[in-house]
Image (cartoon, rainbow, N blue to C red):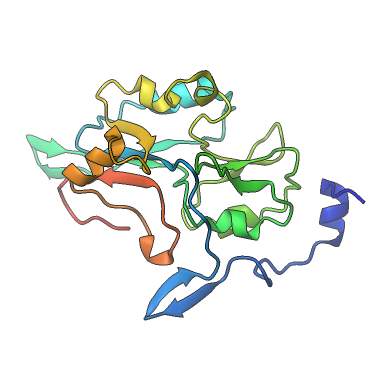
Length: 230
């Protein structure tokens, strides 16, 4: 018997965290995912340099156009901070909100149909629209709250580093190609000679919510003003 949206949702229970899927334990006083995942052949990641970002949103526009993301939802957002400093020396911090492409992704662990998966070849966390039954488990499990239901496909959706668009054509992700200040760097974290690997060893970087054991592959160069909150 095949698992369709209808027959799955008709018999689905309300409990998300069951045997064999993600759970949280306290280990040494810190939260970590009980389940673990293997690294891919490649581990594509990204760096967002907040010192170079000017908040122009060219990246969000390019993402929407290349990946046919409809209005009302977004795979990528740039959030502007409150003003920092005093007039006339006022500055802003811009931070990227998008999928973190976790090496140990909670969304993958809780998905009952395998629709949410981590690509063994690239390490990219992606969604198979045909397998998604719209249960919403992955949306609830994501600590970064960056998944959404696509209003047209009715399946879960999010940033996939342009896996089905630009990457297939041998290009960089749309956001990277469109950034006028080169605030975004994309590449293979398994390659010590790649630009991204070199960058994260040369500059101070941080990742969000690493204490959860998600091992996110989205790195950020901090703006340098105020407190960084993971």
